[in-house]
Length: 156
Image (cartoon, rainbow, N blue to C red; front, top):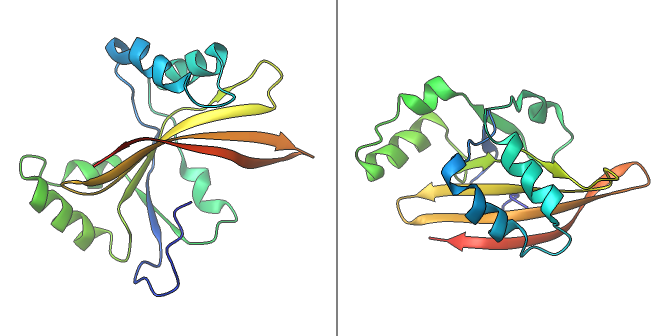
């Protein structure tokens, strides 16, 4: 999903080391957005919101067999970046995390009752007016998870 083309200078992906927190006051609208994705039912949507009430470590993602190396962006490194000036934030981000194509943030994951279908939200930031949001629907088949649908939810 995030592997750049061969001619790209990006050689790794940067992932926030913890899952993204979803504000509880936005739960109803987030559930509404999730329900528009094929295969996502109310139990999956509610579980995503429930699992996104506190951060969960994603350190294990760096050990996965992915097409590109994963650079984990820890909260201290991200907190040290200047938030008041978005252009400086991204300039400093790319200095601190070179050869990446932005920052990927993942929500908690929600599963169907039979635990064979799941979904999560993915936000990708790459600049002041550069980013995308997705709902990724996954399915377990023969003991392995595979992506069955990616729904774009926002773009900047």
